[in-house]
Image (tube, rainbow, N blue to C red):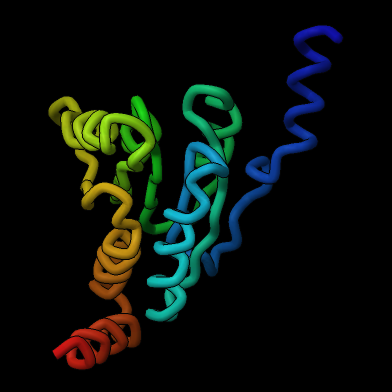
Length: 166
């Protein structure tokens, strides 16, 4: 199989080639399906707060072109990037957009410290927000708080959730 045929086959197979619905406010992107449990925590938080979202599994290393195409077509207001090991995904996303990017470091090796440092040590001008290791629930809540700046209903849901915590 030629390189061109391989790329065409990959494009047909990957769900990321499609554009995201305009109704989706947050895009959750994970570098690997092995991060599903962490992804689920962000999904749960966003669902509880009534924030529309979409999940994609796209590696900045294994599928950089698919990731670029997805980001170019995305209408999301906020990105949550879940990544372990070298954790390039949040930085790559931040380098292609001016929309907020929240990084979630995954405990894959070194207790997640490698991922955490990769996410928080971004160069000047390419910021990535970062939550704690494996703490995608906080990433979902933070994304909802960003959305709430322009959405009264989401703001009210967050306020209700905080009252329930007391």
